[in-house]
Length: 99
Image: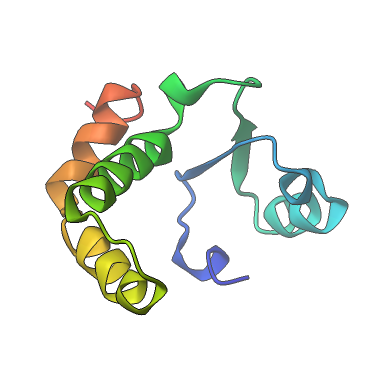
């Protein structure tokens, strides 16, 4: 419901195979708004840009070497703050979704 208002007629929603993505309610919402959707093949990280994001986040977390729960929240915030729009565009480009 948060994503729907941001989608236009030429947009395509690409989803992984998480069970909730296959729920009838999700399909019905997308169909009602005439939004196209595709499912990634199972076990296909090469087509899923978020896998690249998680890789960058995990590398940053390893670099920070956080060893206590008290420091974890700030380390996560710092790791996410390293993600740039240009990173996201590059990941979508690498997966073949944009040129």
